[in-house]
Structures are given as structure tokens and as C-alpha cells.
Length: 297
Image (cartoon, rainbow, N blue to C red; front, side, top):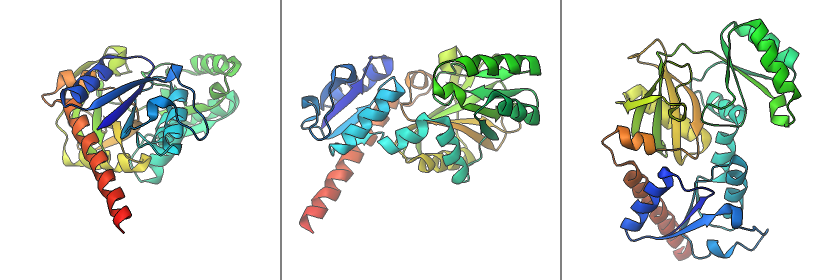
């Protein structure tokens, strides 16, 4: 198949994916979105003849718009713009999980620092303030006192971008020094890992230690439900154990649409990029079969 890979920087994740695709004999076109021009009806030359496009853009804005254009041109894209739109915005992410009945931390949103302070006081300390757009744990704040909260809220209020005027406040979940990242394709887990740290943030990008995690039936059920809630695709589903390590229930705090998998690949026995390409191949094949059936009908 002819695969286009959208990127703005080639990281280890993209190198693993590109290597697996080429090893299987697929034709790969690397598409640096910084160099493209997107018309309303005519796709860039780089998009011609592609069977599927894989979105690996770093910047959220580029991911959202490029996937919209790809879909408008009739080029299958992973992940689709609908999934990207929901996952890129924490408010939409939380709403989708709540609507689907997936357990997720208690969350409230306000548009002024005074209203946000009332939410924090209602939740009690500590609680968490997150940017509505962002990844890798950046610009997240654990609010431990009223004075600290007032300072953080005031700083956000004077920042220029409108997104800082959306105060996304979430209850603090007493996780056991770790959370769980699951990489899944259309709700079917490829592999999972625990991310452990003494810091309250347990992102691998923040230096957390990672190790393989064996999913139980409840975790698998929630991964499938969370994937359906945001529209499916190649996703990273983040869970926290409710009641401490080894608990039999979880809360899903986020679903990621341009999931990184290099740390997971190093932590587990599963060949993650190979599993991703297996899924890509089956997805393209299913689409081709569906299209052929429609033509015959």
C-alpha cells in the first residue's frame, strides 16, 4: 500500500513506524506539513495516489487542519479529524467520556479566575488545573493552597491566548504513584505500561519509569469504551487505579490521538510498531473491500 506519514519532526516513534512500513515493502511518502499548501478542492501533489495517511504531527493545530483537509480530499486518514478534534481538547475529551458512561475524574470548567477559584474551593485541596490544549504534562498545576491557586489563576488570566481563559479544573485522584498508558487500535489493546514517579505527574515525557502492565478484563472494557467514545483509531488511553495499586477498577482521565509508543515498545515484549502496521493494513484492506462491494452493487 501507499502510505503518507504527516510530520513536522521525525522522532523515534516515527522512525520505528517508517522502518516497519518499509520492511514490509510498502511505499512510504514522508509529508512535512510545514512545506505543504492545502487548497479547498485540490490536494497537494504529495497526497496523490495514497491509500492512507497517518497523522504524526506534533502541533495540535497542524494535526487538526491537515486531517480535515485529507478527509475532504477523500484520503483515508488515521486518526480522522473527528477523533482528533475530540482528543485534542480536554473539555471535549471529558465530555465524550462522560456521555459514554466511562468513569473519569470529576471536572468543572469556568471562564474567570473568580469562578475557577470557587470550583477549587468546592473540590478542596489539592486539585488540578490543566490547559485545555496540551500534552506531556506541560502547564499543569497541582493546587495545594488558596494562595497558590490565586497566583496561578492570576498568571493564566493575564496570558494572551484565549485558551488560558478557559479554566479546566479536575479533582486530584490519589493514584499510587503511577498511572497506566494503553496503546490500542479501535479499542483493542496492543500493549500497556505503568508509568511510575515520585512526582505527581507520571508522564514518560516527564521522566517517569515505565514497565509492562497486564490488563485485566475491567481495564480492557474501559479501553474499548473510551475508544468508542472518541471515535476510534490508533489511540493512547490513560487510566488511573481507583483505590491504589492492584485495584480492580479504574478511571480514564484522557485519550490521546497522536500517541507516542517508543517508551511502551521498550517496556513490553510486544512489537508495537508491527502491531500498528498490522492494523493499518487490515484497515486499508477493509476499506478496499467495502468500496469494491459498493461498486458491484
